[in-house]
Length: 112
Length: 115
Image 1: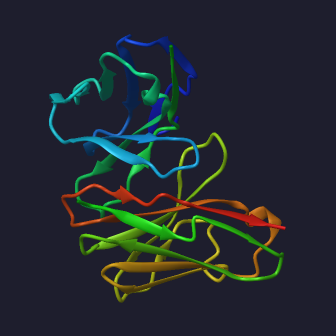
Image 2 (image 1 turned 180 degrees about the vertical axis):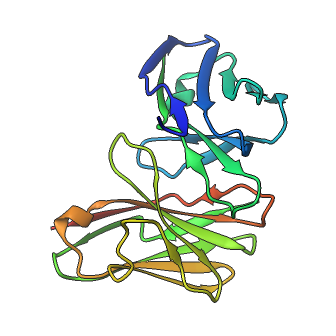
């Protein structure tokens, strides 16, 4: 079993839809959680960074963390074609350096 | 803030030659820099972690004599692919963080093609 599981997609939605991207993890020592967006042939771009259970909102993006269920989500409201990309969840242990453990990424396509 | 650059963005070389890739943190001093490799439609694979002035720590299975990492300053790390072969062709991405409570900020990546 992988430490971090993420549905690879591809996920195709119409413009304006609400998108839900999810990751589950098995190691309860993960305490810091991130979502990155990666466009084709580009480096990952940090979208959200959180370390507590609950919701964190930034514009059209909401990150949700449920440590008791070992489950994190990223919601995208009013999705746009420019949101078409691969979304990677990542998480980090407390201490032990800053190494990240990534999900496999979910490929999202927002269609007109 | 937290901008990371990489140079070059694209490189094509002949088999047997060495290629150097630079990673710079432009607006912050990086405590740690990381080097990743990514194959098409796959997630990032961590190759090594480096701290300024120290030897890099390589992940299991990564040949340290083939992938030389030099972390010369708090804003610059280099990855040299020595005696490159076609199987080394890949997308190489660096990242940097600002401290133990921070996350990583990624560079735009370098695409290497070895002929």
